[in-house]
Amino acid sequence: MKRRAVAILLSTAMAAGLVAGCGAQQAEEPAGQQEDAAEAGEEAAEEAVQEIPDIGLDTESLDMSTPARVIVTTDGECDDQNSLRHMLLYANDLDIAGIVYSASQFHWQGDGEHTISEVIDDYMCQSEVVEVETALSFRPQEIGWIEDVIQNEYAVDYENLVKNDPDYPSPDELLSVVKMGNVEFEGDVREATEGSDWIVQCILDDDPRPLYIESWGGFNTVARALLTINEEYGETDQWQEIYDKVCGKVVIQGNGQDKTYENYIKELYPDLILYSVSNLGYGYNASQNASEQARHMFQADWLSENIKFDHGAMMSDYHLINDGAYYEGEPDLYQFGQQTTIDWSGKGNGKEYNTYDWIGEGDSGHWISLVPVGLRGLENPNYGTWAGRILVNGQAMCSSGEYKELDYVTGQASEFSGKRWLEALQEDWAARADWTVNGYDSCNHAPEVTAESYDITAAPGEIVTLNGTVSDPDGDGLDIRWWVYEDASEYHGELSGLRVWYEDQASTKFTVPSDAQPGDYFNVILEASDDSDASMTRYAQVIVTVSE
Image (cartoon, rainbow, N blue to C red):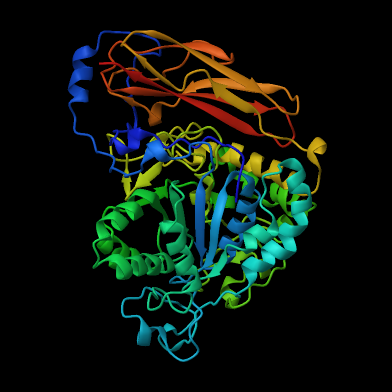
């Protein structure tokens, strides 16, 4: 599927093992006060830092102008169905190479003859409402739901979506990459399937781009694909070449709802990279637990007005609390479209919600991290994506070893790196939902934000000039703001509250703290939001690195 040029930077910095910082050190000095703290800075610079694993990407041969290539595997839970509908609104900005049915500890189809204990030794599945040991299936999702979404919902919305951006893939293009994976049991890797073979084909093809393979359920279909490659090449002279290609191309995204990552993938491919995003706040219970500034955008009134009603076929079938939807294969306890309670245990201690409150998109952070909005987290996991900063093999890629950020609403340090973008993310979703029912002239479109230089080297105490350009394709007014993303910077000095000289101008200046050490860097962002009912926001991210 060919898409328009969208810059997704995958820097040689990753291949070089660049160390990313977790944030500026906090101190009492006000912003801009350049006291001599060189000695303290030198001591801090000597502290041990974690190294980013060598991701092995051949960045010189990568096509930097194309969108991220992604394969999704899903167990079909209602939140996955929401994630797919939401993701398809962004199909113009992603190269969707596969949508594959899979299994997990929560959903498996069975083979009609055996229980899971007769087939899988090391399984995680358990339930308060189903006798797992004797069950021939467990919360099986209806096979064909993916095709139904594409043929009967996306195909309807496509008529207007393509008017807003001609790079949306056709329904037939999407249907051609829907495949049946390993669905019979949690952790089932016994046989190759259409889906696992498709993943093998995509891994071994000549496309040089990274291949992001997302697990929205279990890893088992991905594991089966990697087992197939090992079985075919593992005892041949080609194995080292194939191994290097797999580990240099594949980036797995997910948290895993079976044990196949530990039992197969990690053992056979120890150099393979696993990405997961910080807590985005897109899971179940967000209508009550989301960050305060964005919580209303997960509640009934906002979702009813901006998403659920009069916003196309996909959003009409987007699952919300007590919206009347019935999920084939689910026990009554998990029929969230038929009730106002989410009670996972069945013990009567669940939470009550309002009709049309948010249900969830627990895995959407993975594809959201790939959407090109101007943030450079695919280049360096610490820089940040729209879904937050990226954990690499479970590690935060920064000197403190954790992605703690200051929540500007509560004033407390928390996993805020994803949540800080929630308002812009939800508003963008609302704008995209409008695209399903209106042509270009009646819709809002994202502003264009660029920087004259994205990487600047400067000495301690030096004043650097930051030049940006912002424009809007619809002629809307723009609110612009330069800000220093301290938490995603690497600075071992003593100052806090760092800021640019002029926040609301396209061009500004930034003074590198005099106590900054060589190798420190400052993550400076130009942010522009258009003046529209469904506002859209884009960014230019400049990294100011302290010279030797």
